[in-house]
Amino acid sequence: MADTARSFAALRIRGYQAHFGTYLLAMMADNIEHVISYWMAFQKFHSPALGGFAVVSHWLPFLLFSVPAGALADRFDPRRIIQCGMALFITASLGWAWFFITDTLQLWHAMALLVIHGCAGVLWQGASQMLLHDIVPAPALASAVRLNATARTLGVLVGPAVGGAIMLTIGPRYGLLLNALFFLPAILWLWKAPYGPRFQSRPAAPPRAVRGLADITRTIAEVRSQRLLAAMILLAGCASFFVGNSYQAQMPGFAHDLGHGDAGVTYSMLLAADAAGALFAGLLLESRAGLLPTTPRAALLMAMAWCLALAGFAATSTYGIALLLLFVAGVCELAFSSIAMTLVQVHAPAASRGRVIGLYNMSALGLRAFAGITVGLGGSAFGIHASLVGSALLLLAVLGLLAYWMGSRAAAPAA
Image (cartoon, rainbow, N blue to C red; front, top):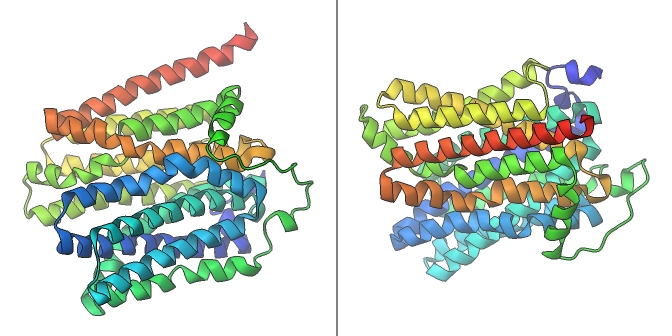
């Protein structure tokens, strides 16, 4: 238990230092590619439909393939799965670069590259979460999950800034060639990293056949009988389905309505406040180990606070309060998502850990594809403010029912 009381426990482990560094670099490169490719594709086609396809192609692979990808990580070496994901990222960056340099990009080329990029993320995320169990001991697992979430946020913050600098210096076409190099450290480190099934001292779980989409129904059946796992996966899925990160796509409208100074600066600061809150939460929870317990109750309370912060943000007309509430929302989102992910990773059965993690990713990430309906289409009908308030309060009610269900299930054995 000593490791859990130490600040930045996972970062004290040499293998995790390399994992964290390569993960952060790849996350930064992921966002650099988004910044450059989205800009160039918009300049080429001026197609809002392509922008919508970019969102769907990013999240839909998580919905369809997270569990099958987890099954692959259960059966094969997670290091090689991650390397395959990095190879797809490199293929996408080099593909964009080729079409931009030769000025031969067509609409179907862009759509194919967006799908490749989405599939790369599915292979990378699940296998990376699996590999944590080999890199860090169990007491430091919560620290590793929080730090990975912090690295993801830091990549989201740094990537656009680096991408903008690359476009201003060497230009977007050759910038994507440079971006492909940022994925190489992960490939090279994992080539000889002493982790994975070959290096495990504990007996390996019997391998299970990979059954594609049939693994989803089987994994759901397994998880359904385990209250804690089911609750955390439902929590992540409800948050993604009702709200997700869809409000970020509406941020230009919120910036315009708040009417504070230049709309571009207002927009950037609103996005930065949300991400800065998440980064602050990651650093605070790591520096103050034990500040927030890793329990289902804590995850639910932080998720409810997230709902209230977003509803308050959508309802306010004061720019300063909007910034503060977005910062609080970022804090709450990182807190509840990292707690839920930690509980899933710790309590998932060893024989099907990859599938269970894949089911969590399908719920937490794949269902974001539908949040555009609840917030986006609702915004078209009722306005973005009313839509986000309604979605956040509806999610709050659903989380209340989830808390009641967990309490009733916990009381049943005692009764």
